[in-house]
Image (cartoon, rainbow, N blue to C red; front, side, top):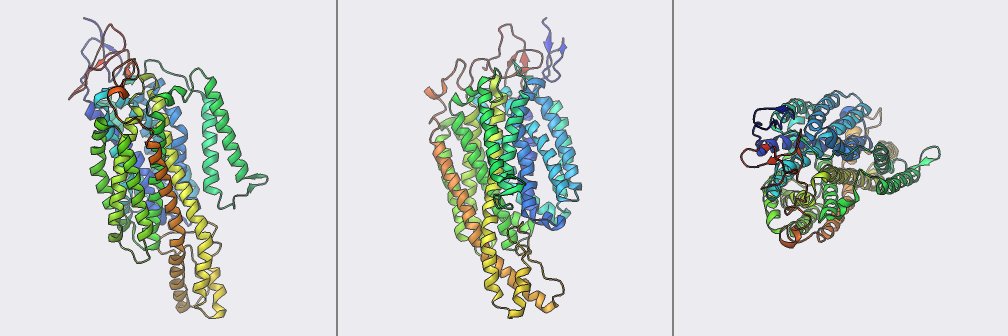
Length: 584
């Protein structure tokens, strides 16, 4: 009897391999995906509380949000390569362990700097595990069932992103903002144990080396771009330190990106194989992924600030106000995943992004200082429908034709686009909001100051400080107004009332242009969606030498050698003499 290999342990043995249930493995991968994407949105809900607790402004909070996203986006491509070298399951478990340790450090942070550093480490752990999930799904599911699997996986991602306000509001109200991080620890520990037991130890048939110079160039380009976007407004888009200014940083970022692209063209094993973008639908689906993520995180940042800072909602109330968005998305996303296998993603993505943009536009038009949660129900339903019709088809269409030896790179690039889009969304939209507030708040404060006696006006205006230096947007903070020391109690209350009115007057003219940026980007994404092939089957699916959607070479193989994978209620690999595996 020929020797067999255990796909879970990857060692030689003489007993048949343990059956592996692909759907159970998918649930474990979804748990990791849920945790890391929840932490990209749940922190938005905690921003006002963290600003008060750590006595800092929105510029520091943007680094708390984007430090995580930046580390995640910068390392996804190399993490995909590490999965090729050491096995995706091993890197997945290591990433989840790092994520858990960093979550403890986040919750224990006492200063903004400590929190930003811990969030960067958290992003490193997230980067290690995220691309492995797409590679594993491609390996344990055949092409005909991959759309359904990706539909569930990406639906979980979307639910994680938009459930952040609700879950975050509940946790923050009951336990404090630190617990949005501490609760990651037991769930991550369970994820590591379940991954060891339920997820097969697949290995790439041709592991690729890691190009460290390419990693450094790509990371430098992303870091430079994000730093300029986040810090540009605070430095008036000029000097940062001596001769080094925001324009210089942007130029250096562009230079690193250009050198990276030129270097990749000459590499035998590039981090980003050029052939990826010649695969059917991969390039437009990647661009749509970036755009959709930009819209999500840009809109989410504005929604949280709008409901808490302008309308005075608590974190829990803000989260409950987002429930129509969360519930509709949860219902629509799995259906969209199944429809993608039947009709393709082009119509779903084009229509979904348009509806998504319409919902954001409705939010911009309907919000007033007297709005309630009921005001946003219809726009949020539109946002949920649009986003639900977008998140599943993008991953399915991008990965449908990717061969096994490019799966790690493809997953890394796709997830990099998603995280870069999220980081750009939060940074660009946050910068637009801060820039507009720097213009509108002094004017609104001056108009309110006219209601005070002349001798009190200067003190009132001085309470706002410099509106361009990290405007504070916590609930009840009125744009960072501080009552001048020594002000009599009765006059102090008058100051606060006027400051709240001035902030409301200034916020709406500032938030509407920021929401308009989100609408414009989403409509641009609908144009990219038109570049997708119309149908998943027929002539569109026949590219490559293998079965539709899976070029020759098959999916990754179990550790120890190639085999044949029979998905269903359970799965196993059998050693065959014919070489690479093939789907039934």
